[in-house]
Image (cartoon, rainbow over all chains, first blue to last red; front, side):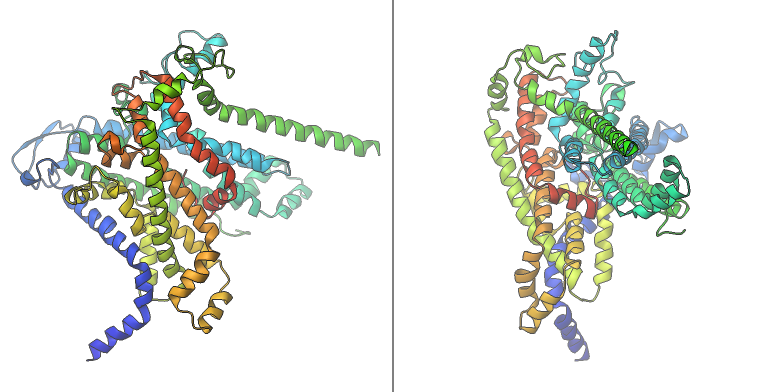
Length: 322
Length: 287
C-alpha cells in the first residue's frame, strides 16, 4: 500500500515532466545508450554484418589488430585459434588524423581570432564583412565544396593556373601528390573559421573597454594589451572553441571521402580515421573491428578533452583580477 | 585647429586602409565560391586552368548535362528528395527538442539534474560509437534504403545541440507570464503550447535553420542509408560526379549542380542572418 502511494505520488509530481521528456528518453536509450553498450560488446567480436550467424568472441583481437604493429607483430593467433592479420593501415590513419587535427585546429583558431579582432573595431559594414567571412563556413562542409576543392588543387586546376601565371613552373598536382594532399584538406578546414570567428567576436565584445583605456594610461602598447587583457579575458572562449573544433576535427569525413574518391587518397595520405572506419565496416563488413575503432576514437577524444579541461587551471581565467 | 584636422585625416586614412585590408582578405575567402559559380557557366573545355572570373564564353550547357543526374534519375528528383527530407527533419527536431527543452528548463522533477547531465554528455559524444549498432538495428527493421534511419532520430531529440540551445533560450524568458497563466488555471501543457512556443520562436527558427543546413549538407548518413538512385539526396548525388579513383568526367556538370546545391543555404543565410549569429554564439554550433 505504501509502495503504491509512493508511486502515485511520484507520478503526480513527475508525470507531466516525463511526458515531455519521453521522446528524448526514448532516443537516449534506444539510439544512444543501447548502441554504445552493443558496440562495446561487438568490439570484442569478429561480427560481420553479412554473416551474423558466424560471429565469434575474439577478446582483444580487434584491438591487437589495430595496435599490433606497435609491438612489431604482423600476424597473431586470436582466442578462437584463428590467425589474424594486423591492420597495416590503422596507424597510418591515426597519424593522418592527428596531423590533421593538431595542424588545422590551432591554425583555424588563430585565423578566427585575428579576423575577429580585425572586425571588433568601430567600423561601418562590420555585419556585412562578418557575413562574407562566414560564407565558406556556411558552405564548406558540403559535398559541393569538396568537389570544387578537388578541381582547384588538381594538376591543371585553378591554383596551379594562378601560380603558373606568376611564373612558377613544375607545379605538382596538389591532391594527387601524397606530400601535399593532406595540406589541401587542412587549408579547406582553416578556410572555414567562421563559427569560431563569430564566437570570438561575441567574446571580444564582452571585454570592458575601460581595461584598454586604463592600459593606455599606464603606457602599455597594443601587443602588451593583447597578452595582458585580451588573451586572459578571452581564455574561456578560446578553450570552448578549442574543444568544439577538436572534437569536430577528429570526426571529419566528407571532405576526405570526396577528395580521395571514397578511399584514402594516394598512399593513404588522406586516410582519415572515420574514413578508415567506414571502409572497414561497410566495404569489408568488418563491423566488429569498426566498433572497436569507434571506441578507441571515443577514448582519444575523451582523454584529449579531459587534458584540455585539466590544463585549463593553468591558462584559463574566470573573472577579472586573477 | 590644424592638428585636429590632421588627426581626423589620419583616422580616416587608417580606417580606409582597414576597410581595404578586410575587403582584400574577404575577396580571397570568397574567390573559390565565386569561381565555382562563374565556371559553371563556362564551356567544359574552358573551365580548366582559367582563373579569370569573367568568362570568355557563356553557356548553360553544364546545367543541362548536369541536371540529367545519375542512373536515369534527374537532379529534379534529388532536389525534391532533399527538400522533403529537410522538411520532415525540421518538424521532428522542432517538436522533440522543444519538448525536452521545456522539461529541462522549466519543470521540476525527480532526476532532472541527472538527465540533463547525460544530455550534455551526448553533446560531445562522437556519433561513431553508436554507428554500427544503429545500422544493425535499422537493418533489422528493414529501414536501410529508406529515409527512416535519418528521420526517426529527429523525432527522438537526438540532436542535443538544439535541446541545449532551446534550454538556454527558455531559461532566459521572464517567468511572470507563465505564472499568471498558471494562476488563471492553465496547465503545463497549455503553458508550453500557448506561452513557451510563441516566446521561444526566435530559438525555434534557429533550430529549424540549422536542422535544414545540416540535413541538406549531411553526407555520411546519406551514404550509409540511401542505397538506390531514386532515393538519393542532392549531397549523395553530387558524389556520383566523382569516380572511384577520384576522377571527374563531367566537371562542368559537377560545378553546375554544386552551384545549384548551395543556393538554399545562401538564401537562408542572407534572409535570416541574425538567427545564425544567435545560434552560433549560444551553443557554439559547429559549422
